[in-house]
Length: 118
Image (cartoon, rainbow, N blue to C red; front, side, top):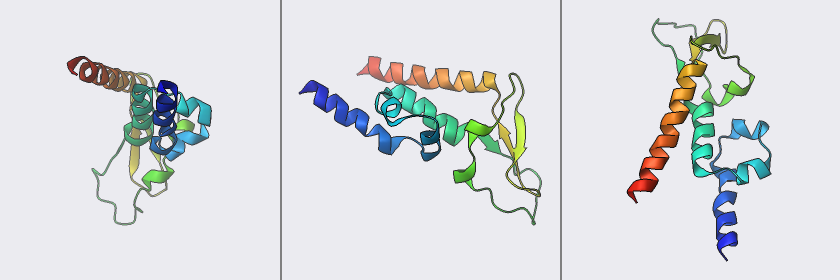
């Protein structure tokens, strides 16, 4: 009974994971993800970049967040990598690998702290 409950919970991962990540993970990989891993993967695909709106650009189309596929973009170790969805377009700054590692560790610690406080 416990294994069927765990399977049902993990099977929910298929609905919870960012759709862009599904190109890089099999259903089995996703089902077997821990809540921490799922949160980390979702962070990578949803929040590991910053759209730069510092300079007004009336001719720039809106950035389509659903089309930012970080799995195809190259990150730098110590510096943010700039990319564009269109030209002209608003710059999209990818977090550096060091920033990304720090965020993934923060997520892991956040889950650990929540588990320890329960």
